[in-house]
Image 1 (cartoon, helix red, strand yellow):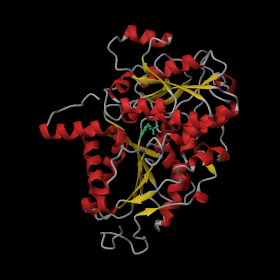
Image 2 (spheres, helix red, strand yellow):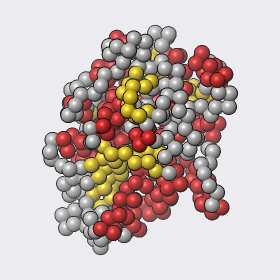
Image 3 (cartoon, protein in one colour):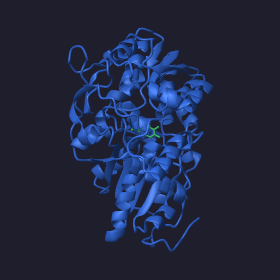
Image 4 (cartoon, rainbow, N blue to C red):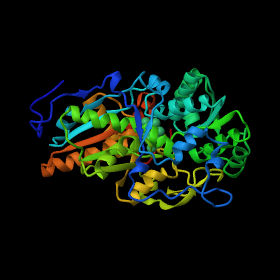
Length: 454
Ligand SMILES: *Cc1c(COP(=O)(O)O)cnc(C)c1O
């Protein structure tokens, strides 16, 4: 479907609907923003001593290759061939022009979305899961432990582990374990072992159950359990689905592809890039290559991080050293945080329920490279429903936040007549989140107020 009568289309911009790259165009390198940051990142600190963390301190948690990537300031890191081979199952992912959404909004802006919902589990998360499983397997690790919120990360890691012959053990936040059984089934189909968190299996889990008997769980609690399970086992390591530098690095395949695809549309640059931000990885993956172009003076692209009003780490949190988990087992990282005890309401966008933000995203916000906005749940779903009814894809509840912010900007431009390209990170699809859509639509009909439980 193409259209030449779309308002505001420049003659130079091609009226295509999607830009598709071939197998040979799959990126060969990940991009590391640390190489180009105008000020270096504050170091991680040891949770016991408060001294800057050494590579050896992380060895019980991660394989050497990932620790190296966590600390490197090399600009480009080669993607190993076995990782690219698995990526090819769904990558390069498509970049779409949202002609129908533009028409519905009557905007002169050109709206694009980079769609990560084409992966086998329906989100961007396998981009790092596959890399992490590969490096662990290459160093002889047998079992990976992790936490999961809505189940997207747990299913991504379960998928990646089966590709490289690893066992996968997942602590799933109780609210999702009880309320989102399909992702648990997906993890189990891939061979993952799933526990409801907080569980009776770890000391920290038993402690949380005592302190907060009615808790719906949180990512921070589940991290504590997964870390505690991996550390004493020499054949086990821990895997994190967001926040850390190496995770953000792996996600940059998204932005590298998107830059080339925008070029295929004839766009010289994006005005604005919108990504939803939970731990910050899909936003960083899309936006960091765009920031490289801006820092090199080639574009004026601005980046917007969109978070849920119920968990507003960037817009309401403090920029200070905090732990990544509730029990305080992880290193201290300087980041925007609501405090490691913060337990957000059980909103539908489970993947955005994290108390803090990736240190590198936080640092980029401090440097003025990224701006942040918070969006209410109902506004996010309204945008998701509009998107589904115009573009046809049902977005993940997380992705709806990025869409909502872009819709607001596109509507504003309908008033001012400003053109230009807006790029949305569509981090996943909402096929397994239809009950959340149903509740939203019902709530709209009965005008029930407030957040609904899962
Ligand atoms: C996990 C998840 C997120 C949030 O995580 P980030 O690290 O902030 O990207 C967003 N969208 C989807 C679809 C997810 O699965």
